[in-house]
Length: 109
Image 1 (cartoon, rainbow, N blue to C red):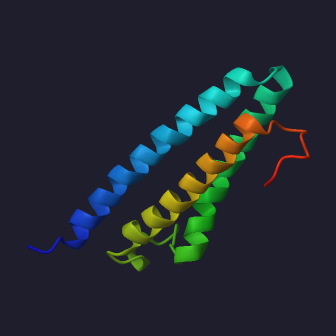
Image 2: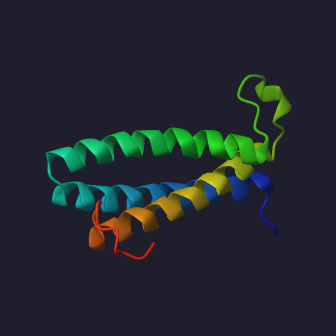
């Protein structure tokens, strides 16, 4: 039996939850290594990044945040897939900060 769109969206939601768990784990590890200023900057950066991720995925997918009826049934999957990709990329960026802390311009991007 072929998976339905609902099945795929639910599977993607599970993958996004797992990616969020991974991101939060790396975030906590990095936060534990930072001084007070670094912690403050990390919190601010993460809040801004979450807002960016959500709006960026709305932009990329054409998601209508005002009139939800315009989105169609595929929209949750498309937005979720975008958020999954950006969350995984952010996790990689934060993981890199574990070995290349802020201010170390010699670290490879």
